[in-house]
Figure: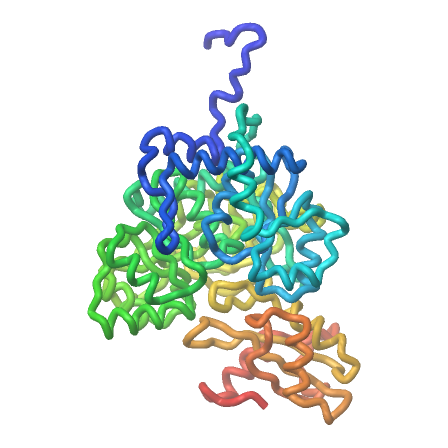
Amino acid sequence: MTSSGPGTDTTRAGQLTVYGLFAAQARRDPEAIAIEQGILRRSYGELQERVLRLSAALRERGVSHGDRIALLSENRHEYVEFELAAACLGAIVACQNWRLAPGEIQHCIDLVSPVIVIVSQRYRALLDRLDLHGRPALLIERDHEALIAGTAPLPILPQVDPEDGLVILYTSGTTGLPKGALISHRAEIARMTVLRMDMRATEEDGFVAWAPMFHMGSTDQVLGALMSGATVFVVDGFDAEAIVSIMERSLLGWMLLMPGSIEPVVELLKSSGRKARGIRAIGAMADLVPKKLIAELSGLTNAPYLNSFGSTETGLPPASSVLIPPGTLPASLSKRKSSLCDLRLVDPDGDDVADGEPGEAAVRGPTVFSGYWNAEETNARDFRDGWFRMGDLFRRNPDGSYDFVDRAKYMIKSGGENIYPAEIERVLLADPRVSDAIVVRKHDDRWGEVPVAFVARKDETLSTAEIETLCRSSLAGYKRPKEVHFIGFDDFPRSTTGKILRHEMEQRLKAEQPAGSKAR
């Protein structure tokens, strides 16, 4: 081994950042289209120039290495520019979930203590209801272009380490308040690499960013596409016509469609006879989608269906490498381990379980996030022995595949959004007319799963409509119970410690309620 010589920094030679890889693509082919939104098209060269100007403007406004930028906006090309500018500066974008109730967003912003808040006109009224504690706020429609036009490009790039945080994406917590998952440059680069290893996506395969940018399904893939030279098609929310139009004319890598968004695309493809130009993989979360619908979507698009199992904290890993062939009605939804990760199934003591026995998924690898922001106790629990505990139970089959069993930390997965029952229960139990309550999941053909509430009343006049009003004032729409059932306090099944047995209530719901019955 040769000496590096006195004073020579050899450590940085092996370091890559999200901005650095994007800039390499801009140098390689500056005329290639980086972003398309409606009639707007920006080349890689143009986008890089704008990002350098925006980076300089943010630095002039006090944003420096490690600082947080709170961003509250719908999907738009400016959102991407803020994330790339943060990548250039070594700052962190805290992507705010505009579906949350004002109190929840207040918590999310306060949690990360941003130095500046960015908001779009659509959510300005929502932001006005919050206390920013004197933090400056920029309005995208008013300020963004002026910032870029009025500032020279950043002349010298700051030093950024791959382990530096880049984005904070919020996940529901078991206590009922969102947690901020910090995702580094290293993790975003690795997540891009897994997509290209397991789905064989190339720089010709674009990505349709219709899912909210506060969701890993969009932010991970947008950054991954721009690091690999592909085009990002920005769509302002789910729009079946816009998505099918992009499918027709463009090569795509992963065409993300989640429960609730698949049916409209299938119906449009069937009624119009339109064809996809070429898609490497389509869909997600096969466990929550009827098998017939999987076969229909994949057959109509001639694209394999992605039998995925990942998370905000891990990206597509640990088990998203199986592609169900186009038009196939899958006999099994067993999964295979993704590239670039290690996966163990462990019991509550952290010991490996035998094949066929349920165990919690424990993951390690470069795609794993850097921990929850300002949550030392949670991180100590979830990162035991250097492995991240996902809270999901699997069984390993003798052939090395994995079957999903259940969520160790009970969670409802509705249209791609994570809902923990505690979020809803704390709202219900705060009402003095409620003596006890529990929320369980119910299968839904459109959304995969939806929350259902069982409530014991102190005041028998309390109605379903009043429960709905109570939830509407405190919870995002997708978190509100889709059914409310009133039962007696003594009718709840309980453990020896008095805790309501959630799984028994779920089984009771399945047994007693026919599909399509109304809330009571």
